[in-house]
Length: 96
Image (tube, rainbow, N blue to C red; front, side, top):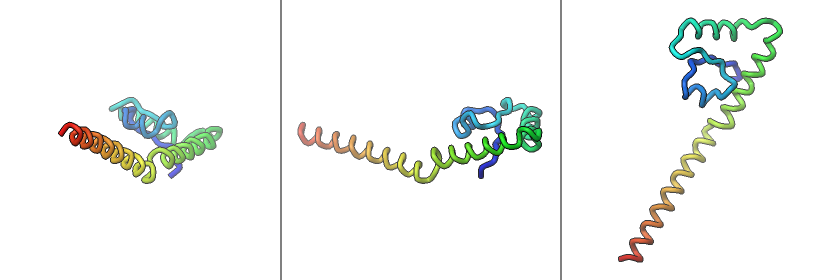
């Protein structure tokens, strides 16, 4: 949605947010609250920067995690499996 995002620092959060996320120490509720407050009420000079981070996150999500991208990845897996199945079938036919 184009907003800055705060998450606990986990591998999955890093995968989705990259370096554009705001990360709280894993399991540290106090740090999560501090990060949320920093994003929700930034100093006046940082308001534009927070908005820009949010837009970069949106762009990242659209480019890397859209249904189109997921569909292409799934189709690539199916093509690979189909190719391997065909190779095995041909090898069995030649051996048989």
